[in-house]
Length: 106
Image 1 (tube, rainbow, N blue to C red):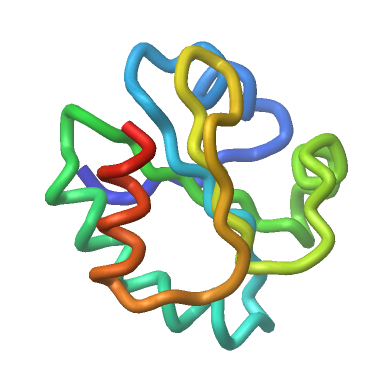
Image 2: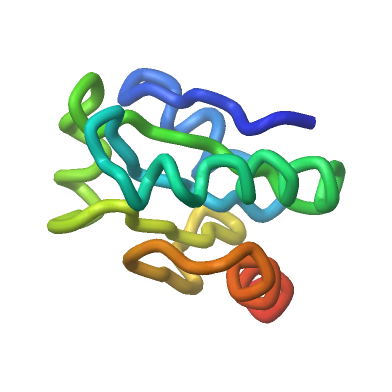
């Protein structure tokens, strides 16, 4: 299962109403660190398929969702369980660190 692009319109349905935990990656095309972690998130979405959904929200195209979440810098990662934020991580990190954070949060 690859990462899923989520918009302001689909945010609640895909994230808050999800049956499984969701990692939300707030990112932008121009963001170097965002591009740096992108491939790791794709790989992790395969590794956690069926247990965790990983979605991406482009902050330039969808300003409402990051504003509601208080996102001030990107990449910004949020872990949702049962519609609530249970953990967050700001900035780029190696794949192993991202995997550890996901495992701790679920």
